[in-house]
Length: 224
Image (tube, rainbow, N blue to C red; front, side, top):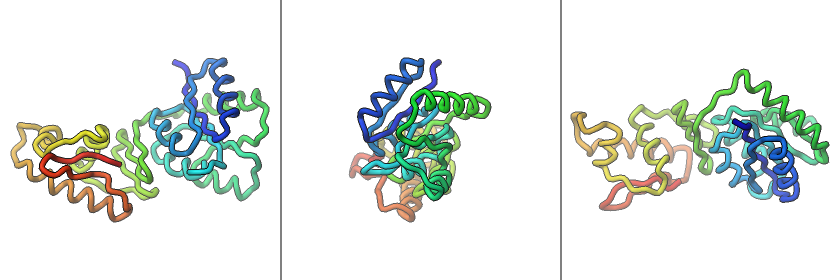
């Protein structure tokens, strides 16, 4: 199976150049022209990310900081200039290397290959979702908001997993109870409302975004 690389840059010509080069060399290439799209593409678990620092909406440092808790692959920054302070900031948020523009594409290819070989020895794969400032890592069953880890009980995380992996789909309390507790459990589906309340309370303590919406008379859906 070919390596999967995510190329993120707001310059379309650079994205096309890198996409063509790496595809010719046998890689699968994902692309993004802005930070928001990069967060969506990062959910596809690339093996390596080439990430431009200077982007107009969400810059590369913020993208790296947001996804690093759930993405273990190497992240190589693309930048027009780099000083010691820039390197420190980049490494602090989880970057692995810097590529200075303009670069030799063959040297870039060699450095990407070296990082991937190194990563083969200790690479782990996880499934994650990135929404605004929220990161849900389904493999490690952890939730981070604004880079702060939130603590959820097992059933609370089970509800988060069910709703967030089916974003926009409405689940009534009975269906949530069936999926999370199962039909043969003793109890009442009204416990779902209490668990939803606890989840909302923990999320609202660190974020102004409402992730779980009540559809009155119907149920709940994930809207983040």
